[in-house]
Length: 342
Image (cartoon, rainbow, N blue to C red; front, side, top):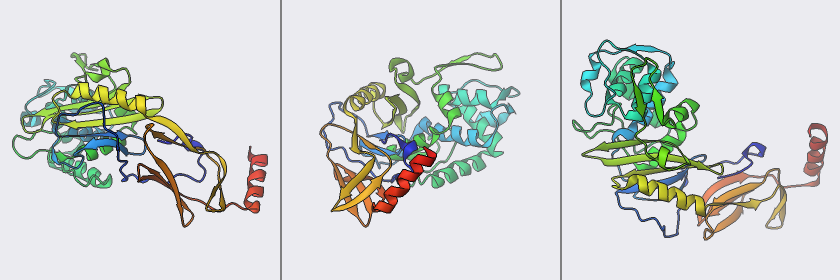
């Protein structure tokens, strides 16, 4: 959402929980239960429908299984497959009791092929017991303030219970968190993976990786109860976007067209230039430029209250910054700093 972040010595305080409301009518029709488009870096909602609807999310919940494993175990760890795999059904990577396989292989099988057998073995290895691993998943959800999310298993299966419950909003925020991890990014962006043990090659079920050049990852999901679920991420012109859909029959087509629409319409617009800015007859100094990615019809406003600048997009606050009134002494300090520290 903002360019030049590394130069922001005062820092922008981004409200992660703010929602940017899109007032424009989308040219891409949505036929499904709910969807969201989120800017990944600051978790700002671009647009959506039914964003707070809670349902079983099926296998896209495996992104939590994946990140918990990455954060808690070395990828070179060798895991011996045991009868835990008997608890898995549905999609699998066809591992067998007695197989010795690396966590890395299991994670690729989990994310590329949605292997439920891989999911339960990962949970057993990392958590020692599957219920303890599920506790780790829910603890991470609380840490990330995913208030509408509850995990009951590492697979996303929901035949025996209500499965893993969440919203498109929470799942987008979880994806944004996972996206900060380079190992996670490498896995979900892989189109084809050859197992380290030489026992085959896996192809990614995420067709957008092949069909849309800017797609950089995602996860598919399906159960009879949840129907189709899909989460994808794309990057173009340094702007990372996440789309999540629930119960959308043409989900891959919708994701691609929605990415194309957003990248065509969102433009980086400078709203502050580095230097002295004036509000209400008072001068303030900013040592960074501020850009907002906006559509041509979006309205940007700036307000000032108690030495805090608030940026609003379509009447919704998206960022705020405490500022210090500019004076000649401050200006003199800035000149000295530039002279001595360049």
